[in-house]
Length: 111
Length: 113
Image (cartoon, each protein chain N blue to C red):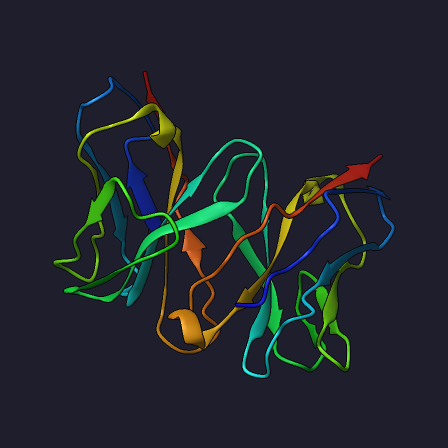
């Protein structure tokens, strides 16, 4: 199973782009990269996912490097409500499509 | 749609007691999951189910049991509560195939003393 590595914490100024990195150097060809976030003690919330192409939705953009060993989640205009723990997860069909959550990155958006 | 609902929200158990955490989803999702989250940590998978009548172990199944008799319900049973089971428990579900976008419930905060 591919493991992920994320910085434990980051700060971002309100209104600026937040770029959250994730390393998944052992990812294999059929494994997807997912991002979730958890605000306070709520249940995690899905943000975005991708296989090898960059993806964008109304919440964020996901940039995956060509060798797929790392990715970056981009929140284009961070707001105070984006303060949360962000989890980068690799989903493998080889393990019954289980999601392995690490400890994530605690993002603080500063006014 | 209510989404994923969990009961109770909070519970305090004494060591050795038993209880069932309830999880229900009204989205007709095939897949359902139980996770636990210890303070300052990420979520760890306890059990999951790919459909009614089918369950499988996750990373940390010891001390827990599950059943899946209907598509909607996925209860988690603690038989002999231990202090190590003090945690927040989250239930999640999603459709088979597609994006595998998991929808999470609000969680049950359990304390075993």
